[in-house]
Image 1: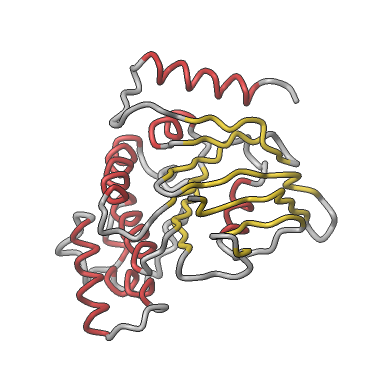
Image 2: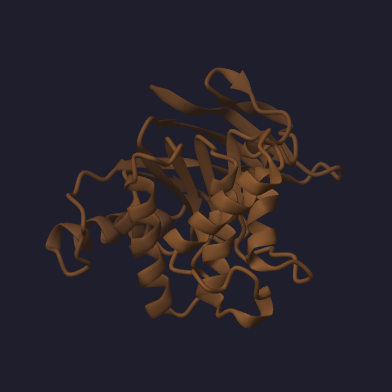
Length: 249
């Protein structure tokens, strides 16, 4: 089943500078899709279009055949820079995710505490984000994104601000959370500049050209999980994507 369908998406700024020329792909049920491309090619801009935060100039992103034109509960966003509100406690930050659900304050507190516990943050509910490490802040950010019980999770370079050891641990935690059948998430679309990360996590990788971006290739990744970065198939896949990115267009 197609959850997200990006149809010939294009985007230009008001000065008519074209950033995205044509991005077309689908994200299926239970599929983790990564979007990768050169810096400045419009990856994050596309993700904001998919979230309904900005409008495309041409084409559109469709959630279950309905064009995404504004933010909704069904599509949630994880930001690169955590985007936590520093004047709120961690549990209060997570509770923001419940704002679109018709549940009581008591239920919000209970569910938010359970989410934080599932990400290893029990005991940090009533501290503030400035008391957390980068990895812990991103765990709060992901918990907040899951709070609205979305079917689509959009992630904008969620691990790039973390050291590699912390990023590796959080990648594993994210995959474990998404495999949890109690979670509502059906599809994940992640923007990344890290080819190895994309191959490790994804079922499908959408490779974009430089600006104005278009789809150069869609690579299906059929390796079993967990994936070893030393596996010859893994290394061959990484090399293939690097070659696509480095070939002059």
